[in-house]
Image (cartoon, rainbow, N blue to C red; front, side):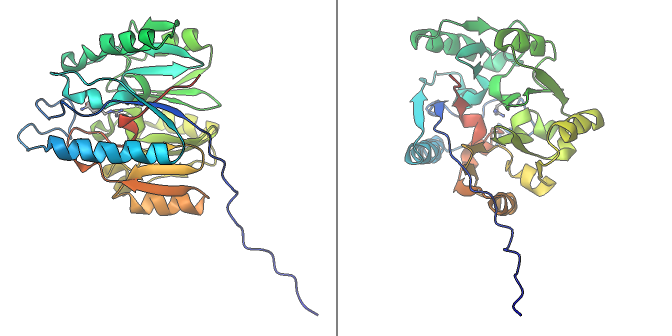
Length: 280
Ligand code: ARG
């Protein structure tokens, strides 16, 4: 008698959703000050290479079928390439950031202007420090809000009032992972991946409760900014050296794509930092 073998557990097929992204070409990129442990103004940067690496990310998004708009880079604002920090946009409503460091504060006005020019009418300037999608990760269950280094916990109430969605605060404790998007990413509406070492005990409990099936990343993944990824629900774009994390994500059914953003990492940013998602 032949025995029926259970089919090998195959990962569930993944569905990509077309996204709208805004990016800012690093035309004025340099590391001229230090506001996170990755930035060393004494180390040389290559702007042409930064632009080429950034272009490869933009091209990949377009090849995957996504829409990419751009905002003009401004002289004197070398970190403006990190578009994720400009705002948080949910249901077409825009919470324009208020930056913690004076070096970046002038970016906020440019973002507010950009959204108004695009025809957005619900454009609110944050009253408390709030660094956009750097610290806010939108999931179907809640908007997750990182604090501890950059965004002020009081900005959570502002976000909650504007978007009418629950906002859940998470405390970051490792200065190398100073924005939430360096330690946690949404893979799909209800799936996340995170590096537990970046959070305090209470926040870990919250994460375990909300996402019991989350993919966990290790320190090695986090140190190469592997968590600073962008996912469309099927395709995951992550920095080149994050091979271990990529393999784990493939085992979960995702398609992984690597980009080399080594120049931008010198300022403490990678794939997600360069990408602001507009949720209509
Ligand atoms: N140099 C920038 C800063 O420290 C990097 C921002 C990275 N952006 C991000 N979404 N994590 O503000």
